[in-house]
Image 1 (cartoon, rainbow, N blue to C red):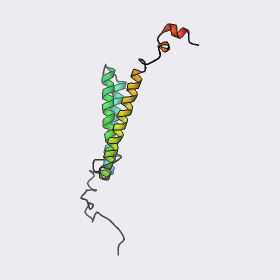
Image 2: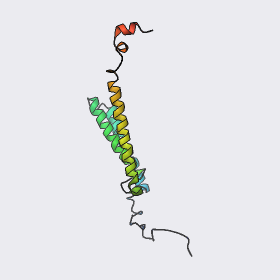
Image 3: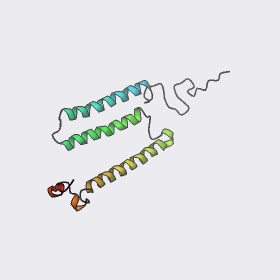
Image 4: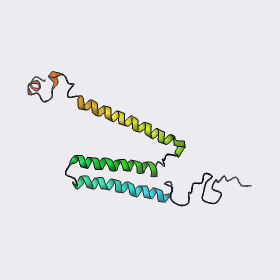
Length: 137
């Protein structure tokens, strides 16, 4: 009598039909190595873009770096955190969407407040007013 509870039934498939032996799953060594290589490439490219002054515009450089950062986030989520739309019955994806909404609200609000701080400062507290600076202790 065997107490081993293997759900693969010797065929490389579990009860849900997922193939674990083919190397296509991100949780295999091949999947981890693919994720690692992609992460290294997605780190080296922005480093080269910034250090090599590839673009003359800093806005273009920032856009490329931020775009590659977003791609790297997706690579980490898939290959290292094993997240997809079906994991945990979709709750992981719902938690991710909720987190993204909170981050966007926080960042947008913070940028809006910082942008409008100069307009809403008290009249005697202007930082570029030479007369006001002379009166400061």
